[in-house]
Image 1: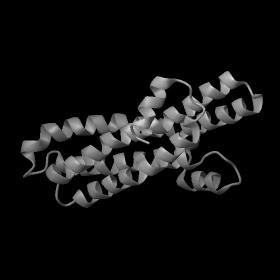
Image 2: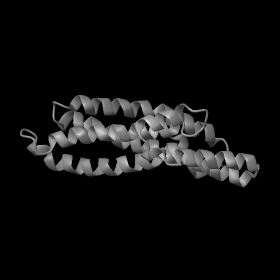
Image 3: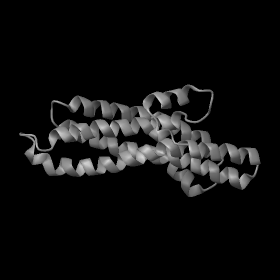
Image 4: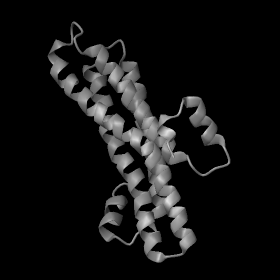
Length: 177
C-alpha cells in the first residue's frame, strides 16, 4: 500500500473504487499535509520579505516544524490503511487479543492525526498574525482545513475505542472524543 506517492488522479481513483482502503482517515491525513503546505507557502512568502524582518526567525522555526509535521502527515496517509487492514484481519481471526491490539493501533492513527492537526492549526493562526498579508488567506484556508479534520478523527477513534482495553489509552482518547 503506497497511496502517499500516487498522483492526485491515481489516489482519487483508488478512493472511489469499491475498496475500504484508502478511506476517510487517509483523506484526513492528506488534508493535513495540504494544510501544512499552505502554511509553508505563507511562511516562504514571509521569510526575507521587507516589512516582516522582526518575525523572520520565528517564521523560519515555524517552517522547520511544518516540514516535520507535513512529513508525518504524509506517512499517516498510508498508516491509516495499514491499521485498518490489520484490524479487519484481527476481526477475521476472532482472537480477542489481536482485536484489542489492532483496535488500539487503529485508534492511535486518528489520535495522532488529531494532535498533529492541533499543532498545525495553531501555526496557521500564528501565520495569520505575522505572515505576509498577501498570502494570509492561504493560512486561513489551512486553519479551516484543520478544523475540518477534527470531526473525522473523532469518528475514527469512536469506531475503534470500544475494543481497546488499555485504560491509559482510552483515557487519552476520551479527552478528545
